[in-house]
Length: 228
Image (cartoon, rainbow, N blue to C red):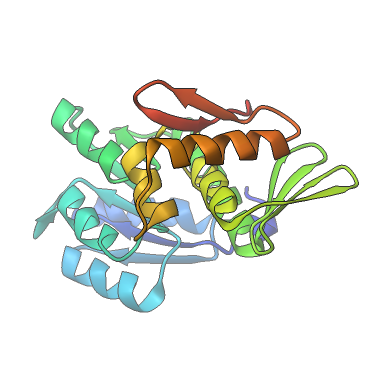
């Protein structure tokens, strides 16, 4: 059972098979207070627009649209919602799409509690921390998103907006690598990111960090580097 503070995440379950959806919703309601359900993409999009669920769990094959195509449409406006896709297929094409769309997980059916629960718990923790604007990296080390600062033991370390946005991006995508194009889109946004400006940012951020949590993967990008 989830701690009470994590149960408030809003969940949407999308599945066109009635019995499967009913079972999934029953399971999810044991963990979360608010669970929505949809049998079509049309219904799902209305719920996402009006109810703003934190986590969306979707089958990859829905009767009126492919689940990844639906997420691709949503991602044009929404970068924050956490998506978990369930599929009977493990084709490379689907897996590559899943990476590009920033999914939390792409899970192959059948899914059991031992596999599913830890993923839901991690999502719920991240949502709670994002909403509270305070992220705990490890003991005595916190990241205050709202005020763009690190709190380490009794010290407060001020970050620039770019440093704070970059660090938050790495954290949101852990343990995955954040590619250079993602950094451009979500940190620099409408400004131009050069190799030199990114290296300068990372060098400055590392000097402020009490531990090594920014790891570079050559010609690929960066990742959050704390073992949990």
